[in-house]
Image (cartoon, rainbow, N blue to C red; front, side, top):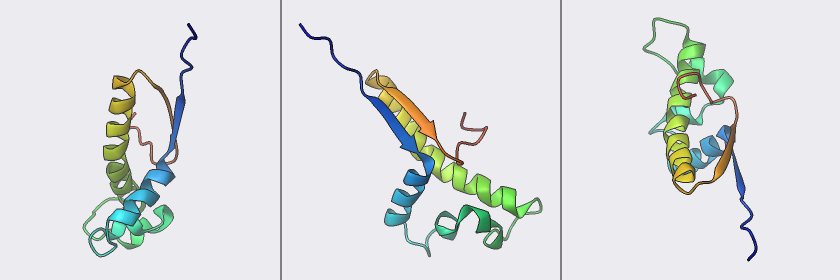
Length: 92
């Protein structure tokens, strides 16, 4: 009997962001469609650093998908590599 070869899954947070942009309209969520380095131009209701606030808002969107991805992979006993700038300390 041959041993099963484990597949290693790799997911980039930028890929997740691009997929989300395809399914969510810009007018429904402008922060999602902004380049990360320009999110400060969209954040309006923040008393703190708008760059950090915009970045964390994008991270929050991406982390919802990543959490589902990781739980599914874990449930299927699959190894996963996550990489990208939207892996915030809150998610890790």
